[in-house]
Amino acid sequence: MTERPSLEWVRDFLCPAGMAKVLIIGLAIRLAVAPWTSYPYDVYPFYSASVDMLAGLGMYGHATFSYPPGFGLILYPFMLLLSLFVDPSMFGSFQPEILEMGAVSDLVSPFITAPAFNLAFKLPMIIGDVLAASMLFLMVREWKGEGAARSAYALLFLNPLVIWIGSVMGQFDILAALCTLVAVHLFIHQRYALAGLALGAGALIKIYPAYLAVFFLAYILLAAGTALKDRVSSAARLVAGTLAAAIPAVPLLLATPEMIDFVFRRASNDAFGGINPWFLVPLIGNFTSSSGTSTGAENFFQTPMFLMLVGLVLAVIASVVMARSDRLPREGIVAGSLLVLMIALMFRSITNPQHLLWVLPFMLLFSFSDKRMRVPAFMLTASGLLFFLALRTYAVFLYPLAVYTPLVSVGQLNSIVFAYFSGGNLVPTLLLALSSIMGVVAVAQAVITITGLPSGWFRKWLWGAGE
Image (cartoon, rainbow, N blue to C red):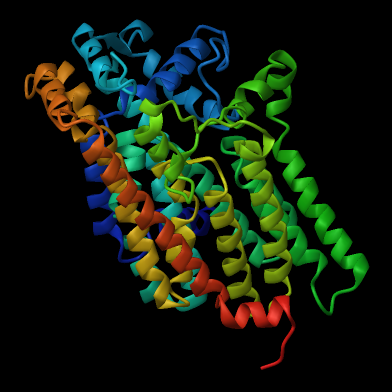
């Protein structure tokens, strides 16, 4: 008799009341595009990690997979199941015709993964989309009611950027975003050990959820009206839960000690760009490269590592300020989480469109408290889509369709990309700059919406001036 309510809860969570049509439409779109699209340059490391795991070499076997092990652990069962029906040697094929694309871009790989691989590879992201939308529905329903929850579900699950990132690009940021949503939900309900466990699980997928731990600890330790002993106990439970989530990584670390180097290799380069305030660095380089001007990192203060440290300091400051705010607890936790995640997003050397999923669900969540947040959320969606399409045109995402069906040829797609770059880098550069400006403005507007910058927030928190 106890199973029926549990099963009903699972059913209601996966398909909330009144959302069946939205769920079916969203799944139909994802399943239709997933097999026939990919971004060959980005998908190859995941293909390599998949065949390495199936061959017993581990996900870091050929050092092409440079992420924490969480996604590899999630991906492995899907690849193992696929290997029962498709030989791993058929997971993809080399296409010599695409080699000529090297004349205009170094971000196009001639190795094109097969439709079966693409679908199996993207299924975790599709499942993640469903779970994230359901989690958002649950959080908004508790806060603002059933009607608002339905709107939130549709806004996330049918969001074109969310669909594109998971089902076209094959990027798994939605899984980390899901963990942060779960963590915030549990934190609101004072389930600190489980909140820490969710944060730790997210950090095993992408590092950035660790920023939320800073805010959570500040919120607990600075809580007014709570005994010090209780605050320390709550913080200890949060930390214990976070550390417990790292247990699956211990065997990998012992077997592959170089894993840490693989994971943090991105922090050691001197590249800047994407949808953040530093997008001008590579643009200036494009226009000054002929004169010999260099924009590379010349000292530590110009490196991505320094930028990340600045972001971490700002995250600590923002965490303390938001933890001491006089907002209602639920609104304060959501607002503080969003602010810290936006700092993590902007204070990194390269912010790719898939990283926008770090904050987009929380923007939609907060928009049901303050409708002004809806505009930045829509702007961020447009920014990410424009960046994807402006980088190498839509044609590069259709190579699986060209290789494995007669509907379009590789040569036709090559021609589209060549035509796009026929006038040089000016048009692509301007479109990418427009995308970056839209994204930065959206985040700035979101920060103003949360904090009340510049007047009220500065007076209250920096100078302590009374109204």
